[in-house]
Each structure stands twice: as C-alpha cells, then as structure tokens.
Picture 1: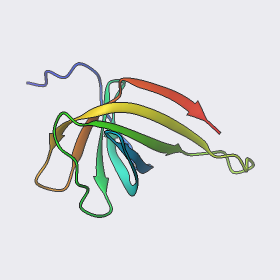
Picture 2 (picture 1 turned 90 degrees about the vertical axis):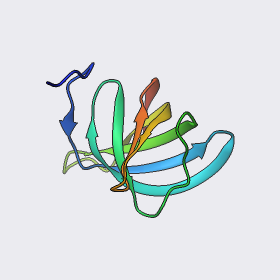
Picture 3 (picture 1 turned 60 degrees about the horizontal axis):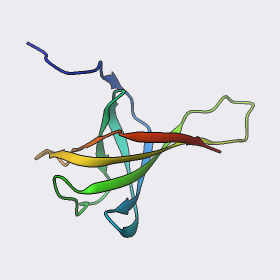
Picture 4 (picture 1 turned 180 degrees about the vertical axis):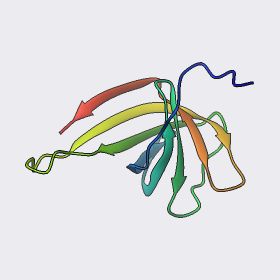
Length: 99
C-alpha cells in the first residue's frame, strides 16, 4: 500500500546539482520523478552525496517552441535516500523560478 505524502509524477527533466552543503558543484543528471515535496534523480556520474546532506539543485523545465527563454526551478533541500540503481532522493523544501 502506497503511503507517500504527495503524488509523484514521472518526469525526465535536466537537473544540475550546484551546491552540496557549503561546497559549490556542477554535477548534471536528470529527474526520474517529482512531487511537491521532493525529487528522485539520476546523476550522470557518481555523485558524492550523503544522506542528511543539504543540497541545492536546478531543474530545467520544458519551454514552448516559440520561446527562447529557459525556465528553471532553483531548489533547496536535503538528501533523504540513496538507491543502488544510482538514484538520489532529495526533499524540495524551498524553490523559486529563475529565467
């Protein structure tokens, strides 16, 4: 029986981890699914993240074909789960839209 707090949506969107704790990064990957409280993503390379660690990431949202502007979701959260299949689950505690 599913006991999640929020409905998940299967979305494959570009993601970039830009900060781990107080250290700047630039690690790319893509989301596997998202909800209003978190994201599950796959890093392109083995990301060195630990459970409980603060993380800052950007998700690039799809834009309309006639728009040249990229809309990104700038998110703050923490790592809550590391999966054996290279999936990393992080909370979505604060966010803002960025152009």
